Length: 135
Length: 126
Image (cartoon, rainbow over all chains, first blue to last red; front, side):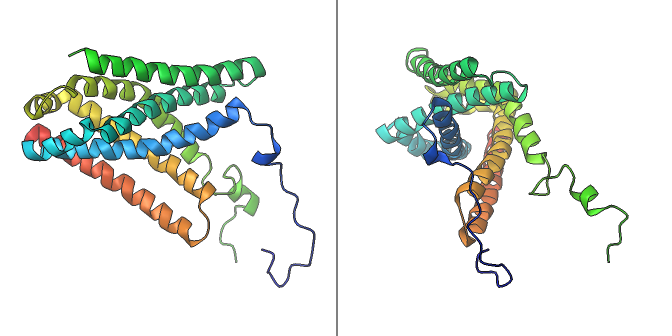
């Protein structure tokens, strides 16, 4: 580091261009959303763990979970969990395509980003429609 | 003195700056591939239990197929999440807090995995 006694006084090392240099792009936004949804899924698994533990306990414990998940906050968290799961999953497919060398060029790259965004929202809406209508 | 015939270059070649090579890269991709069908299965299982009461949900989760699929989803998911979260922490958390964050991440993943596995098995066997 700079405080090292043996290091001579030099100019700061050149840094590669970073986020604030570039014009924001869709793929850039999708990259950070992929991370955010990934972190969000951690919270989703927390909800899942609560569900499973409550279900493995007794009806009273399960009722506490049940009333929480049916509350406004619970439904919002569940909606976020659903969208995060689908968005992150489609993002993963996109990454798998890139790993195979497919979709790195301009037009397809943008289309894949749009498809991930729209697909994630669409699958979430479809799942919630099924969840609220089919019994 | 070095006790190996391998040259320093030979020891680090293909391992990169983190000395672990592409191990995490590969594992996150293998788990992500497994998680595509497992996530779809998980969503379907949730949709089948979402309107059920305690006994109904327990009856579904006592079946071997949903139980094993949820177990696989949780374990593959947490393995994947631990690696993913670790790379997020390494990128954004600096200083001494980083070590604590990494420890918390590993502990949380193991604890959540064990809690979910215990619960699923208890539902099936008790």
